[in-house]
Length: 490
Image (cartoon, rainbow, N blue to C red; front, side, top):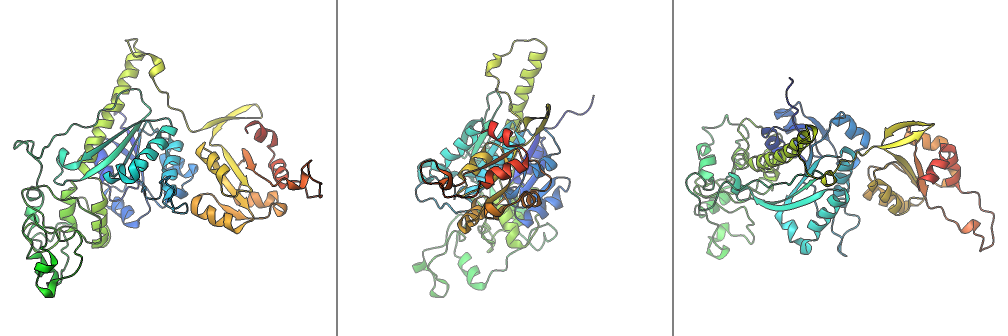
């Protein structure tokens, strides 16, 4: 007998790798990870070079790229934390905000890979922001892709991480079995075995940074004497006194959140991904090093972060705590195993739930008949007279790969660059567009559908016909050789 198959995952917006490491510890294999930031890619290369890493904006990913990176493997879970700031449907939404399309891109990867489960994480503030609109939009996105959605806020300290860090998680599944969130194991007022882990337990052996110089990423920030003078006034577990109580030479108006000293006997405050902006050490008059921050996030010392000290702090501060990711991964693996057990019981004829309750996973590929033969592939399309892109967005949400977009207006080109950066757009007058032009733009790809909304004023039967040339949409469709198929699928 061979080794049992490890469940497969994709990590998007992978950052410093907290999710990847936690899922790896729980027995998952990362098929590929992606992030737009070079230090994230370098960190993966240092710690797990066997993982395929896509360095780039996921809004530019194509189905063929994703298929190449997955190698045709079945995907069990897609995990990521796409930014949500630009995604609101409120009236003050900024339509041109490029962050609007991160969730669209996240959804496309889900459609293309058809995973059994999806896990999205974000700041807990998302649940109350704009009266919960962001939460509702994420739910709608996942439900539109035929997933059952569960939402819960989890505190990393409740699962053994020495840091109070609340994050909201969206778990979505296509499987029939129930999902159980991980059970809390640590408590603020627990016994010696179940009490919150503390800062002292995690980092006090690193207090003498010079003596621990061989520990990776343990680089002390060289503070000015003015900053150190302020630090000396902050008690353990406390904050800087009000400005009016400070000596005049070290006062300033706003001290932000960096002037907080941690306490050895408590969990850490939430680490923030600012520029070297970690809290102050419990006993030393300095901010935490990236390694101390990594300890408070659950990373082992052999896990090395790439980049400058400031970049290391951002990678650490943005990460999902490793132990929390592991507990979630264990819960997801149990969920997957329950379905596998159900399938086995059905095969051997034991009792099983009504099959009508079992949700079948639908592949993202369609079956197309060409000359009487079937072939499976992702449907492709070309957009003519693109305009604001409503028709194109609808086709993309239905799983089409749009190979090219055409319109002669400058404003359409600007809109396409903002909202459809993954679709090659060409500023063309359709009366001057030839098949050779289209072929030069899309190569040898086959076109399944040509769609668009050509102006009709010149051939209306109501108004006087003014002899406008025949529609180039029809001509391009005929030249592409699939007018009947295009009409059949409308």
